[in-house]
Amino acid sequence: MLALHGLGVSRGYAIGRAVVIGAAALEVSHYRIDEEEVEAECARLAAAIRAASDELAQLADHLPPDVPRELGAILQVHSMILADAMISLEPLEIIRSRHYNAEWALTAQGQALAEQFAQMDDEYMRERGGDVRQVIERILHALAEANGRPRGLKGSAIDDHGDPLIVVAHDIAPADMLKLRGARFAAFTTDLGGATSHTAIVARSMGVPAVVALGVARTLLRDGDMVIVDGEAGVLLVNPPPRVVAEYRARQADYARERATLATLRDVPAITLDGVVVSMLANIELPEEAQAALDAGAEGIGLFRSEFLFMGRDGLPGEDEQYEAYASVVRTMAGRPVTIRTLDIGADKTLDGEATVATNPALGLRAIRYCLAHPELFATQLRAILRASAHGPVRILIPMVAHLREARASYAAIAAARQELDVRGQAYGQNIQVGAMVEIPAVAIAIEPFVEAFDFLSIGTNDLIQYTLAIDRADPDVAGLYDSLHPAVLRLVANTINAGSRAGKSVSVCGEMAGDTELTRLLLGLGLTQFSMHPQQLLDVKREILHAHSNALRTKVAAVLNRASEMDLSLLNQ
Image 1 (cartoon, helix red, strand yellow):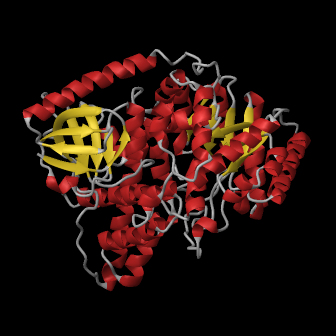
Image 2 (spheres, rainbow, N blue to C red):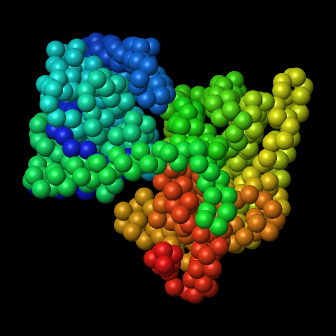
Image 3 (cartoon, rainbow, N blue to C red):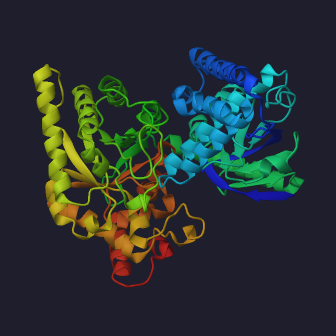
């Protein structure tokens, strides 16, 4: 038996036969062409780009009703990337200037873009480099087909009627997931990817296990290999012995019973054993995910990341386009609060896709700093958010606040957006709360004036931990030092929660800590009563809350925080 370790991004267990998808990066020929061949080579590449565009449009126009909602939005993003000049025009210039053949020019441009995305500080943006790679591969497939070569997807193993199928791939483009949707896919595994890769997003929406970042799994497996996917541990087992298969079948049955039991908690209020009411909110990135939040019993949207509207496109989204996206979420949530975070972008990335590497991107011109430096962009987004508030309760969340002057400037920008809508005669909600992300240690330390300045606070634990410990969690050399249980981190979280409680202001945690069931009792002990997480995590966390005694946990956590030692979670279960 071979055991490969990666990152589990969608929970559960699957047992089946491997379907090995062709390498994501196609092998291409590299040769130079003569001057008289340049325009013909450009025409060959342009035709392949049109063919790829037509294929994506055809898929988007004929989406079956039973596919995950996320796929439609992802296909749209790929279409926008395909139309971007960096993909549709720049390789043609490489052909003309360097006399590369079409495949070489395209992959050369792809490599340059990949390096730019790899340098980006934001994990979500780094993984969007995978979208660019998948679009380029689609064009390469079109070039191969035009030359009479088959596409990379295999069909023989997919058409059988035996065991469930496990996809094993270097990477999986969303359009290819659509093409393979008729098969009995029990799980997805990829060599590449991360927690926010499209494979992860779609797998979670389909409710099937997925393990990504396996490294070289595709090159080691063959079609028909018996495999087990452990989405809990992030492990892929190849050709396991019968006793291991039997063990995992038992785990499958246990997991199915667990999910069925959890489903009964959907409409049960999240109240601790000692009567503390906890608010359960969802984090989303796409408007289509709002329905998944409702299905999981979310009481509202605690974090709607607005960046998705601005990514992978040529040009900025207009006010009406943003309004429609925000309003669709507000309508779906039907009276439940929707918290929309303003654009968190900048420093190592620009909105037109051209990367500029800052000396220290994580500390550069990003989030609210970027928006205040681009007032018209900020004003357009604020008007769209305000207009969406006419359809239900909306809260505005300002990211990366470090100074009170940023709070004052944000309020002034919101007031100016209201005035402009008044002049137009366009409706908006009258009681819109404005909150701040607490993700910079300076704010968590000197929290009182920020509590007074804002209506609510949301702790972004991912960045708070990174900045507190001076650790880039995406850097493999130091990622092991990224520690959510470090005493300094816990004291900053506790300080923020306590300050909000004293001022009567709500405080939520919307980072990864909120969705980690191993940390639920700890957060309750810190006084947290508002959790916001991925919809898939809601019921698991709710179960922990229903079996916890909040006041007893507060006593235990306070005792540990008063010491300099690191948190021992086992103490909270005694």
